[in-house]
Length: 315
Image 1 (cartoon, rainbow, N blue to C red):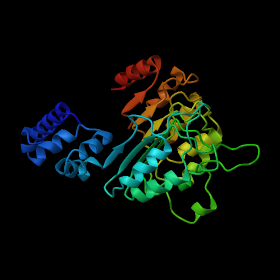
Image 2 (cartoon, rainbow, N blue to C red):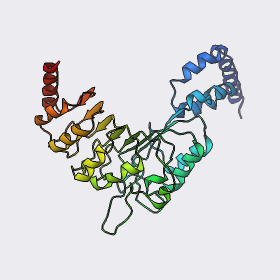
Image 3 (spheres, rainbow, N blue to C red):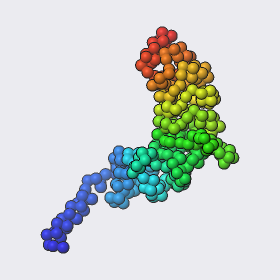
Image 4 (tube, helix red, strand yellow):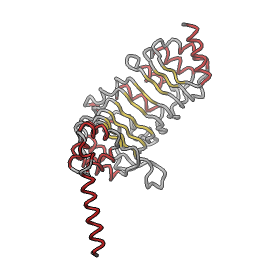
């Protein structure tokens, strides 16, 4: 190493020492905690590598009750490494996204048994699980049944996911209750179930829900364009007459008759989304007015305006 290089390196070390003993290191813990609240999980991990003080603050339980890893796409291998490295009893919300990383087929990656098992081990007190863009039937390593997911959840969000549906060979439906499940009371605590933009979901799969998770207060089928108004589908929805408060049906193929049945039985609805349902007309407005606990209607402008007008007239 030349003399000039050594001198330059000594200067850099001296500046680094001064920086580490600067004003920020005179701040109280509470102030640094407030600053770290604006960091993502990735940024917290980087901050923890700076010094022991930063590490202690960055690993405070307050920052790990929610782990959101959806800001960028991680491979299953990287996620497994993260889950092993950062297990937390305090974590209640986990958000991960499979995306379409290095996948020439254009399909999302599999949600594997290994990934699922490690989530349950690393976060035993998990209450809300968000899984976005995963395939549950692409290969033998993927879990093929919803009952293998954590059973102590309050909210389960399977958004933009691909799931097994009934096929000609009689394969197991993703929502079908397995014999293993029948021996335990799983999903009794589940209150929110979302399949938003999961295009593979079909109406014939829905009838398993009432036995699978009987206490739902919110169901989200937004963007599930294969949902059609079969009798099984309607009967399943109205089976939740004692619990259901929020129902999202945007971009499905439901009809005026579907809304008529819903309004007759689901009297406790607070939120109803029927936007961009091409088979819904203004004729259902009179039915909607019978939902006295409805606080928010989300619909196309013509229906929304007519509903608001009729509601004002009633008041």
